Amino acid sequence: MSGAFATLKERGFVSQCSDEEGLRGLLDSERVTFYIGFDPTARSLHAGHLQQLMLMAHLQRAGHRPIALIGAGTTRIGDPTGRTEARKILPIETINANAESFRTQISRFLDFGEGKAVMVDNSEWLANLNYIDFLRDIGVHFSVNRMLSFETYKMRMETGLSFIEFNYQILQAYDYLTLYRRHGCRLQMGGDDQWGNIVAGMDLIRRVEGAEAYALTSPLVTRSDGKKMGKSEGGALFLDPTLVSPYEFYQFWRNVPDADVEKFLLRFTFLTVAEARSLGSLRDQAINSAKERLAYEITAIVHGESEATAAQDAARAAFSGIRVSGSAETLAEGRGLDGIPSLRMSKAELALLSAVELFARTALCSSKSDARRLVQQGGAFVNEVKISDVDQPVDIAWAKEGQMLLRAGKKRYFRVLVA
Image 1 (cartoon, rainbow, N blue to C red):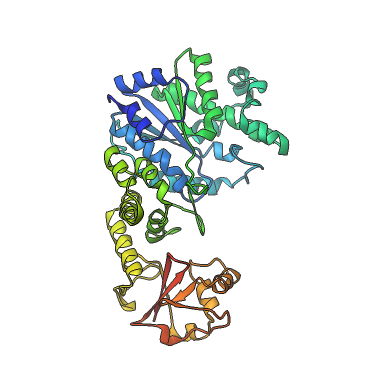
Image 2 (image 1 turned 60 degrees about the vertical axis):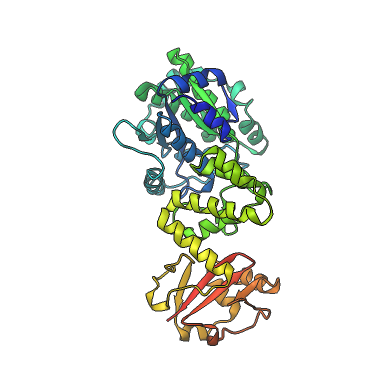
């Protein structure tokens, strides 16, 4: 366990800490139970959650015990953090289905063997709370003035803050208290935007139990070009392969700005600090090998080594101009064996389409208007031939050995398998 806190610092996981020296001594001297919460507001975790998952994995490898909290209870309220308007209230059935997906995904990052990690759902203790008792026992410890001093609530006061959202911080604080009582949890972590909520839980433990607990947040991850992590050109970069294919996932990391390579290697892989910094220091064309390593390592962690290898091979083939292997007959519906996303269509179906309509059928474009803009801007290619006419019909002769390779812009590929 020695050096656990230093590892977090070196890898860039530490931003705000309630007591840095105290937490350093605790993590370096004894086994600590800690937790991070994940509210199941979508079908899948996305790349924005990766930092917290990797943080938990690094601490577990150092000998500490993680608690992964699925916030099926708090999701019924909706976290106002970072929001300019209230979150949409999801049906309980949707929340529960999302929670089940989260459990499966989180299990790939942590070892839940006996005594090694804990998975909990806060609806277990939040769903049936007695409101009067809760106000008397827990609500009494919260100051409205102090809550309004946190940036989240100050920002929302200008646009409107509902009473239901105002309760969110109290419920999250109660989660921390409950985990302290049940599991001896002494550290809660999250992104910088969660600082107010985490500190509230730490203070609640001190007031109610007279015990020392800790808060630690990590910097919100943004790319050097200002884009928020977790977002791709088509929306959220989900970890679920049915929402974002391993090839698309790989390509996202392969195409990050040069300035982000070292930071992402440190936070999103298990490479040593020395190797991450060595790769991140490469310049010019050499940095591309570091980006390939980054993309491979993260894809292997999320989707497995075989998927990472397939995505890497497909990307190399597409960019080097080498014909992608695999006939239409041997490729699975929905995604090519080599990793490039694909779609099977018949010759008769293709003959009725324009090039714009063809691109709109793929994951390269979200709609016909999106595909039309792509053509007009000179970014649509079939077998490396630019499509310049928005009225261009599909030519069956485009199919080479039963497939067409479509490209949007410089780096996004999709294959049409001709039945």
